[in-house]
Image 1: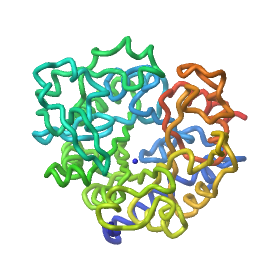
Image 2: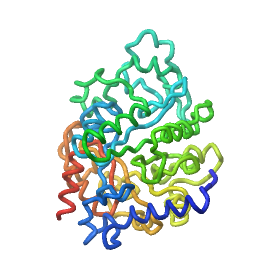
Image 3: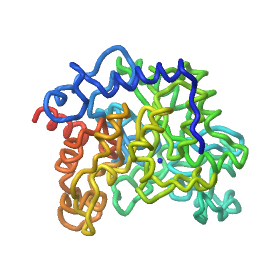
Image 4: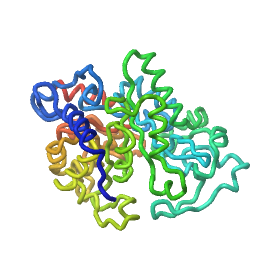
Length: 388
């Protein structure tokens, strides 16, 4: 994936009801925990977070294990493979204020911009959240210019098969995603969910390109800014979620990186807290005041030892549930380099390891869902877990 703000008593009460329904299943069992709660695979039908199966399978940037990420090809395939939610997308602005879906504002690694001589002079070096990065950035392009580019595979060394699709799809806008969501909901006869993220919001706000207001405006335009709307919003910057909490009533999730890291908005504001502080009972209680869930890295659920093997689960799942928060950790991938060492098979960088074993181990901690590049694997793993 500042100061605490709230929406006032009315908004808080509504959100409490929502998160209570999300965390509690049939008979009041905590979703994802061992025992009777495993049977809670069938969703409720009255909308909102509680309508989602648990554990929820979230297509990370679509089905990015099989198609270049953040393309309609990837999003579409995620639905075809059974994802309950599609992470569409990571939102970054253009120079003329449109929101587009890219993993990062730097697009040299995810588009064919380097093949466009007319944009050669746009290559530059910028400092993004304290890191110097050289490339091409969405905020230096108009939407019309970005639409002349095509998406490519970001991690070709691990996914050479995905390069077959390089150049096939353009960069989607968030508005196009909202229209696509409605279209797919009609075609499939079931509600399609999306899970967009505000990317580097402090960085873009300094450029006069505030993301949250643009997100809220589009959600309002399409009637998707309510607490039961099928759009979950997420960010690594807690103040971005606090800002969204005042603009919309959607379910909100705070993303959490490694325990020693600091959210960039904290760095900018001089807030000394780290993620380790945010996952204490006090930190989780504060998050529960303006969000419905957290999206921790999987290492915060089960740490790894020096050899990359899984160790003993932390208390984060229980601690978060105790405060009414759902947990959607990230990211499960099938390839060896991305799996814990004790679930790898061989040494090939693009070979699959024992992904089912890894899914089973994480599901057993009681998480409410997981982001995965391979939604079909996640769906089968959930089926195995629920029926075990």
